[in-house]
Image (cartoon, rainbow, N blue to C red; front, side, top):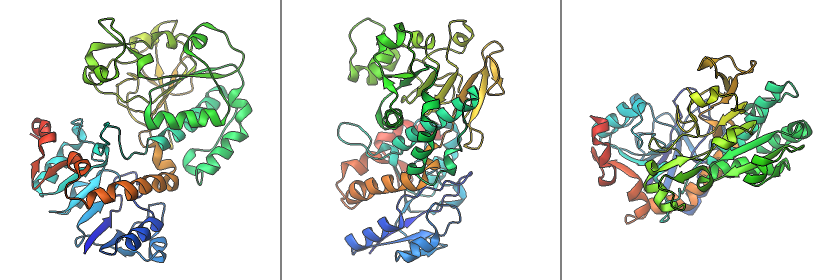
Length: 402
């Protein structure tokens, strides 16, 4: 009998999402008679202990008899159980300094770590992710910040919405005010995150325009333009855009974003960014009289990354900080001449029920069968370490853990 366990999220502030909902846990037990599943008691998550109990799922204080443990965020070092197999977002594959001790402890305790972020299809697209929900919430919070900046409308924080249905109802209540004023919105990036952004923009029937119209025309209605990688970056050698070349040679590209900083009012940033990639603009660029952006929603939230004025992440209860382009320093948000930056790093947690349902569904249908297959390349390629050693694919982390 294989036993699975759902981890209580201990990282602060508490994350209310789960890997499997109560209904999905019950489905696992019904579909796989040789699998048992339990959940660690939690006062914080979206689905209560009683909901799991009512679904026939054991709630416990001790997961030590489980074989595979499923979480969402990083597991605190003191809560790691020696010799177990864990699945969660470890945020270590980019050598993030704040998680160095985490991966060192995982190796020391002979833990097998399978990272959700590394589960990919043969074409290298990710199997799992909360990106769509980051895009949905991030765009909602963009308009909430815009209403506060302009003084034209107010909406409650996303985390006070019961679900996605209520989020849409709130937005529809201020739809005309959002679209008023002929503002220009530029959306940067692709993938799940941007699909969520575009879903909200299209729900509100904000007109999509082509880049040339966005850059050259004065428009009476609020519009948006979507720029994917081929419209954001250009090869330094002048050769045509090449998708495969770009992802293998980030340093060979420059940003093409500068013209949009001169005409756009709002930027929603959802690009995947690595240090070798060019930034959309520099901090110094913001001091130019031609720099017109007033609000940047950095959903990607790479600190001083593609948006260099994302100095730090923010909390859902205080989602926006200001950037003073003259002083080149942080300032209070919503003040005269500042650029407002919305940089909440954990946006999907503000729609915990919807996000858990979507994530757990993909995990159940796609990843769980792969976990039960000893020959699965998907699982092998997402396994960072086994028996106290880094796997070959992740051996590049050796210097990081030292």
